[in-house]
Image 1: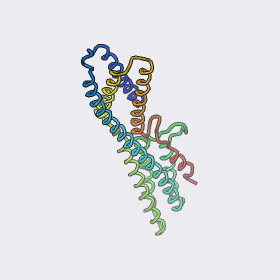
Image 2 (image 1 turned 90 degrees about the vertical axis):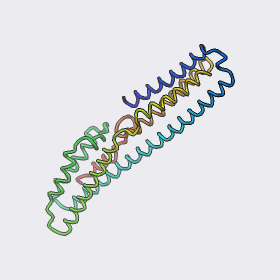
Image 3 (image 1 turned 180 degrees about the vertical axis):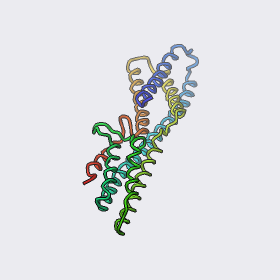
Image 4 (image 1 turned 135 degrees about the horizontal axis):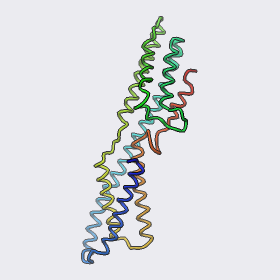
Length: 250
């Protein structure tokens, strides 16, 4: 499921818990809701609420940190692409094929449509073009010490770019397991069931529960979106690579 579909499912689960609590209140005998029982329920629900808040806070912090790290890695990759192009330019006309291959690679990463972020190509597509860059550099035949130095630097940068790309590939999977998410949603559903159990049956109470359920689902939606930084509504922009592409070959 997409992040939006998952968030909608979470909202339905949580809000259904609140509605179930309102329904239970009408059928539970009054002696089961005496002050002592209410205090016990409040203590248990308070514990669940605290655990849920801690877990949600940790999830947001963890996914935001991962998102920022990948964004930084992408910017570093763009900078290394420009530096590699300049090194090949200083090598001379013999490196023209390598520069063309580099430009083709970056163009494949960003896609031809400027409104379409194609950063998933970093890990899945255009692998032939990316390997071609290193192959073209390997084919260079330096004649002077300066050319040998430039070729060595270009090889080092090409290897560095490959390491960054495969690192992004290794980090492309989700870090939030389904059982973990199910447990968090279960806690939240129980929490809202208790809210509905003691909530008055009127429009204001109903609206408050609905808005708070939307807020909780929205928080988990942000977590899920940040966990997939190369797709969805909060994907990392490929502006650094597009800026690099604009100066390649010049």
